[in-house]
Length: 569
Image (cartoon, rainbow, N blue to C red):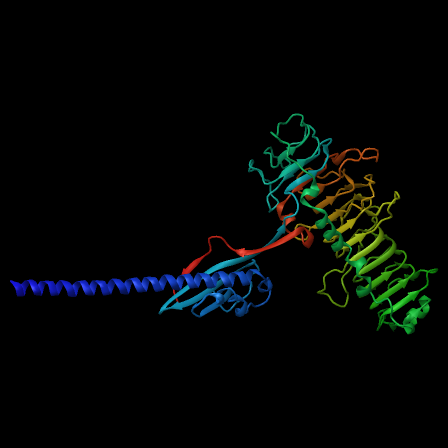
């Protein structure tokens, strides 16, 4: 019995030892797996932080492993780690280590091995840029908003179709004063009945025939969102041409290339008689403030490099004039051109007065792209006063493509700084510009389209702090302005009307007014007035596509819910 008991105890002891060994091994393996996972997660956090700090991977390969391990390497005893950055393609291609599909997202992956246990984890890092310093509002006013006649404000989906989803609304009309509508105001897409925008008003609400259940109170000043620092940044962005004259224009071409007459200037250029083309081989200056440089010989082409005109420039009579950059100290007149003229960066110290051609079959084209570099983006523009006209259906329309533009105007006078006059019938004229800014009055009329959903504009009426809140923006164009309108020293009157279908609103985007009432200045106390059949249509895609750096913030961060643990390779 003693031997049997001893044998049984020995067997149990052996089994217990085996059990303990197995348990310790499993515990050690589990601990190694967990520690390996912890190290892999720490490495992933370090790598993601490095990728977040730069957006180079949006366009170029990312290979900075030293930076990726900066935080991880501070851990004592941390095992070696393998880093990878690759695009979120299907199927996965780990060698494509940049955002090749242009969706702003890449995978960041790390692999660690601790005590023989390998762990591989990854997560998505995304970069997104959006307008974030402005209120999310279709219409925003520090004071009153009035919708006369049959005018309306409504929202659409990002694809431009009617938004009949109802509450909660994608965005809101925000009014710091009173909101007065008309019996036709539905806040719904034309021809539809579902309200598409919310309404928040500090003052009274008058909506005859409709009940919109507005939120009362809580509307601050536009400057609470878009403060003076951001306003100054947008002004600087618009004024790039004015502030960087020395770098954009060659104002010292050399005495051997300074000419006081048109004849001398043309004689210094190479002439091709078969194509009637003059070509300059170097920068040139026309220096004659008393006589304008008139390039108006019918059928001729003038190709300059940098052209500095100390005086005025006149273009006309079916010519084509191209420059790499164009500086004009006085006035710039264009008439009867049916060609596209490329000037590069453009500075006009006086008035730019341009009219469409004297034929409905031609179009006046003015671009600030460099004619020698077709891939270059439009250059910046400074003009004292800009007036562009296409008077009737018998006169051809105009097409303008500018970079960031500042129109200075003539402060303290009643002069209009910006005038767009399209034809009353026929083809629409077009104006494309990322940022158009001024401190003075703006007037539009006729068939003029500004911006597009893919390339919207920002029209910015900057406050010059002269306490003269009597400026106005009289937008009577029957075309569509696509983009943001931000006004700090002008009431806006939208009177053009549209076709009533919703396809062609007067403004596609948003109108934001930050003009507080100033008693005794001529200010009416109404920031935004719509008349006739005019409409404002809010489209989030337009806002998202605005390119102004001063209105946007870029956020780069891990994509929530994207963390994954993969099998070790």
